[in-house]
Length: 136
Image (cartoon, rainbow, N blue to C red; front, side, top):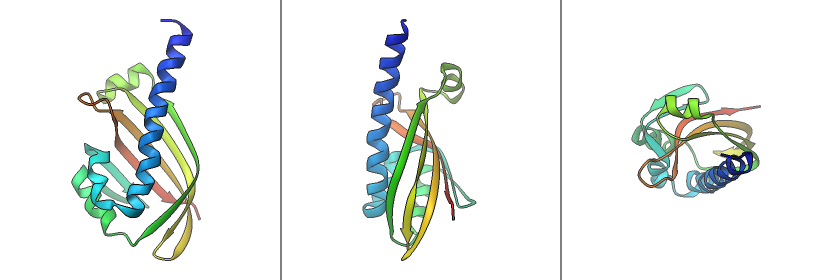
């Protein structure tokens, strides 16, 4: 496989991840009942130090947080190496996100680090690991 082929595969995977990430912040701000389908069944979340495991538990946890309005200022997506993806059980990417969020009327800066894994059935990315933290 040529370096051009690898670059094209990388580009397509990152574009697909960007679609999920742009939709994710809209869903968490306006349609939290749809969050579960964005997470892998065995996903984990650490939200400002609070651990939550499993897609349904994550949806329930995030639904309990006061209303939010995210302003994403940067997203960087990188495809993980084949060895890392093999270890995690599927093609994976990391995403680092930064911006600000209004939670319950209070504005905070935030950082978010995600590991995304492609679903083997529909080839859409799902969130496997989500680490969200205020950066105030």
